[in-house]
Image (tube, rainbow, N blue to C red; front, side, top):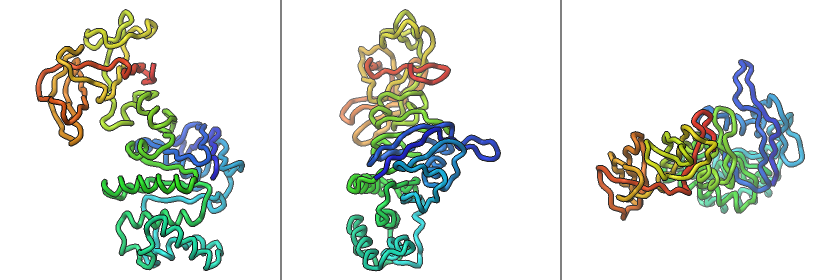
Length: 348
């Protein structure tokens, strides 16, 4: 295992584009950390700098106690799993898994032992003599993971490894990757644009936006206490409702409807109010009118999309809760409300 430390890491390309602003964080031994954000936010660039595939403009990168800024990727004691599997089509599964060990000069008997152990761990034993073309997408991804496992690295790096799989396989492979990492106890850094993957797999999440870190925290912290409107809207499916509100005389109001929650007198004026759709209660005696325009059936839940105080709003209710298109009222749970600064988007 290994701790990974990024101290003042920054990436600027020759054309002047700053892909990653000055960044500081530490990934602890045995931790599973997910870098998440939209396309172009810098998450893959950060991963590639850790891997040694991208030069570091400024700062210090440590894996364990060793500074690795100028260390070749092959000498960093890492294993990387890519989106495209990168398997050799003419080789069997056995040879694909053991190829890196063979290049290192590992003995044939040790390679065989390690390959057998990895295949057993990943349920690939019966496929060892097949070629990649004879495997499903999920099985090919397991082979790519097996090739990483046999190296017994101090650090796993995953670059959107599930993007090419269908939804059902992605769900299955999320569980398998997390279980494998838990079993091995190896430090892991995982890049994805999928917030569901981030929420379900991570010990801690690092949310990136336009080359900078918006928030670092556990999935629960990120979800329930977002540091900005960006995090609030990006993390969660459906996302947090973000609506215009006003603080007047110590109370938060939406279009004049009062009593939503008390607020600090220092925050007087316009604010952005955030609340998760599941923290809204349909209640005919509720504080604010809500018009339901669209009702989505999701099996275990229902999503109600409509208008609250002249703004788009979503409510999530259980499958047994009655609802219909038209006018109703809602009650917002006071302890679930979050206030954000209108200009900066930062939480107040």
